[in-house]
Amino acid sequence: MKAANMETSTILIVDDNPSNLDVLSEALAGSGWEILVAIDGETAIEQAEYSQPDLILLDVMMPGIDGFETCHRLKASPLTNEIPVIFMTALSDIGDKVKGFNLGAVDYITKPFEQQEVLARVNLHLKLRSLTKILADKNLLLKREIEDRLAAEAALHQLAQELEKRVEERTAELSQALDNLKKAQVQIVQSEKMACLGQLVAGVAHEINNPVSFISNNIPIAKEYIADLIGMTRLCQHNVTSTSEFEDKSQDIELEFIVEDLPKIIDSMELGTERLYNLSMSLRNFSRLDTSALTPVNIHEGLDSTLLILAHRLKSKGSFPGIAVIKEYGKLPLVECYPGQLNQVFMNILANGIDALEESTISCPLCGEKKQSNDSPQIRICTEMLQDDRVVIRIADNGVGITQEVMQHLFTPMFTTKSVGKGTGLGLSISREIVEGKHGGKLTCISSPEWGVEFVIELPIQH
Image (cartoon, rainbow, N blue to C red; front, side, top):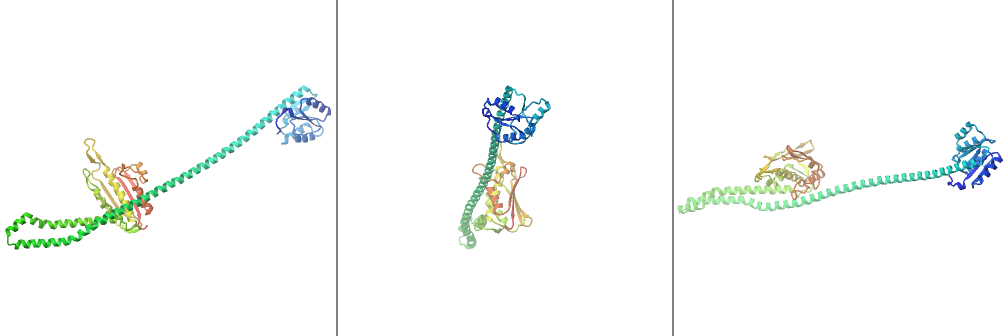
């Protein structure tokens, strides 16, 4: 489409009458327009396709193809279908005019020509043609702008989607990295804690064991010596020459009481050393520093050694009545595990249960005296076989239970409901990692305000 400029417009006049061509050319030439002529329809079509005039004045009655057929062919061609056509005719039949308009003509000029009318009609349609071109150009430009904007929006949308996807992927990577970091931190803390605890417990057990062994080994000899001394005392009592002096001395030192009480003292010392020895063995059994590999162990021994270490926390203190431990041990085979780590799980769960029962002590609002909300606090430990290849350990307390909100975060690292200095929030997360990550088992918690909290540990018999 040519640029719109009325001063340089081109007009094609099609008429088989030379006189009409001269009249129209002379009438239009003074307006500065370029004039092209054709004497038949075929020539007019070729000229129109080549020159692309801005307006065509087309005679209706011509030899060969008439004006109607010529107009039909012009409108059918994509090269000329937008060129406005004005019919020139001496016909006054309304039907012919309607036919011309239906074929695409924009106006009629009646012969004989009136110069002013021709100029006015040509000028009007050239203006319309110019405005149409301008509008078409603007529409084309607008269409391109719309297409460009749609393309830009599509590209922006795609970029936004890609960016969102990258953000999601990066967020997932960071979340996974954070989760891995937390797990690594938990494992490091667990390793350090177990190492320190194991070294401490083993050291204490060793220090206790040495003097206990010394005392224990000497008690039988001391018993023999004391028995001999008592025998000698009895012999002297019956054979001394100065009976009154012996009796006075016997009364001063309470000889009869000494003879009767000294064996009892030795027996109690023997019992105490036996208990110390058992405690030492329990400490060593709990730490199990000598066992860093999977080992078949007796689960009940691990539970008992842990309870022995925590025995001082189970006793009554002031208004606190003490915690009763109820054991319901089933018949279990040896379980292949890391005994030191598993004992740490027992320690964490039992210590949490003791904490919960101790914190259930409330103060009277009137006198400030502490009263127990549960007058018979207890911890129940049950063990049993689960199918043929797993064992289950249930450790339950009858405290106040755990809320559902807290339950959702119970095994989250660093989460704790205890006051500052009393809890790190690592015990249960470490316990789950030991049970599930190291042993392929399962650690779950069940709670209700009516009966307290129960931890369930499932372990495979063979790892």
